[in-house]
Image (cartoon, rainbow, N blue to C red; front, side, top):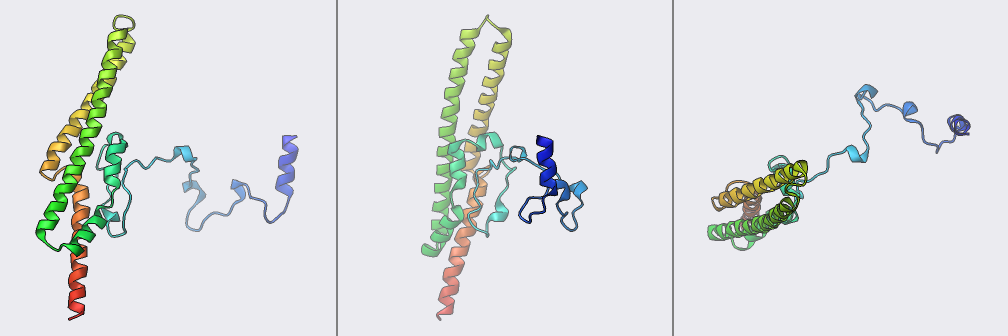
Length: 202
C-alpha cells in the first residue's frame, strides 16, 4: 500500500506538489555533494546570551569569548542582553562629559558584579546540595559517589571563574569589557550627533 502511494505521488504532475529532494534543482554554484541536510536538533543553539542591539555594534559580538555554560545562566545572560550601546548613546547626547561617561561605566561594572554574585550564590547552594547527597550515598555505591564528587568539583570551578571575573571587572577587564566597549561606542556616537547638530545650526 505504501509503495503504491509513493509511485502515484511521483507520477502526479501537479504544479503544487512538492518535489522529492533528489528531483529538486540544485542552486547555481553549489554542487549537491557540498550540501548537507540538517535537522533542527542538529543545529547548535545560540547561547551567547547577547542580542545585536544595533547594526553599529554587531561586529562586537564574540560568541566564543565566554564559556557557554555560565553564559546560559539567566543572571548573566540578562546582563549581556541589555542595550549598552543605546544607553551610552543616550548619555552621550544628554550629558556630554567625561564624568558622565565614567559614571555610566562604573554602573555597568556594578551591575555585572551583582549578576556574578547572584549566580555564584546559586552555584554555592548547588554545591551544598551535592555534598548532602554525597553524604547520604557514602559507602553505598562508589561509582555514584565518584560521579557526585566530579559534579561538585565542576560547580566549584565555575564559582572560582565567576569570582575571578568579578575581580577583573573592578579593573574593567574580563567579560565585562564587551559591555563597556558597547557603552563607550554609543556614548561617542551620541556625543558626535549632538556636536554635528550644533555645528549644523551655526
